[in-house]
Length: 121
Image (cartoon, rainbow, N blue to C red; front, side, top):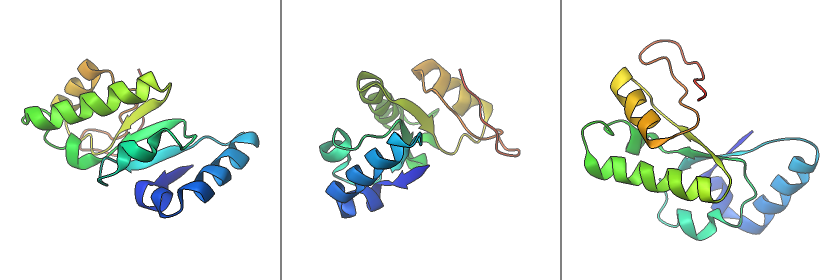
């Protein structure tokens, strides 16, 4: 299951409680659009999610923009330190996929211009 960053921060306590209850039933969660809000890091450690889905606005130009690459590297590192897997949105070509592999992003959905598939390393 996924929960968007904006939905999670709307009521952090309630969201965390609901996620914990559903995780006890065997569900896994991805925090979607991570990085799109300004307070992402402040609440991340309070949400018991399994995956961190990095916002596509940082991924789209990762192969051309060193700041976008640094943002994805940072999100990926923090997630891994927390024991989370990472997912990158908008993997639209092979060059983007290559950079994400170099960084160590765990899941890159998208067919590089084709039908969406999951590529797990």
